[in-house]
Structures are given as structure tokens and as C-alpha cells.
Length: 75
Image (cartoon, rainbow, N blue to C red; front, top):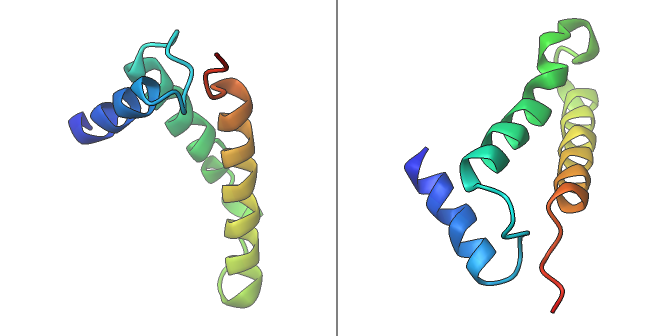
């Protein structure tokens, strides 16, 4: 977890991530977004291409949400 927090701090310092947020808060929110659907086992296809597509779609949605919640710094 320390490594992830450091990566978030680095991204904030580089202007790729909103620096107004505490990196721990960002990490917790990202983890909760990423695991929110995991509590719904009926949503996940059991195997095969359908599963890979489902996971790729979920990942893309998570990335989009994070980009909107914690945008790059605009100076």
C-alpha cells in the first residue's frame, strides 16, 4: 500500500492527478470503485471471452471515473 500511495504522490507532483486530495483518500476511493461490482457475483461471466470483455469494460469504466474524480492539474 505504501508503494501505491507514493505513486499517487508522484502523480500529484507531476500534475497528472489532483493534488488537493490526500493520496490515502484517493487510494481508498479507487479501491472501493474497483471492488463495488465484485460483490455482485451474478454479474461476472464464469470464463472465456465474455469474462475478458466484461473485465475490460469494467476496467475502462473505473479508469474513466478516476480521471473525472481526480483530474490532472490544469495550470
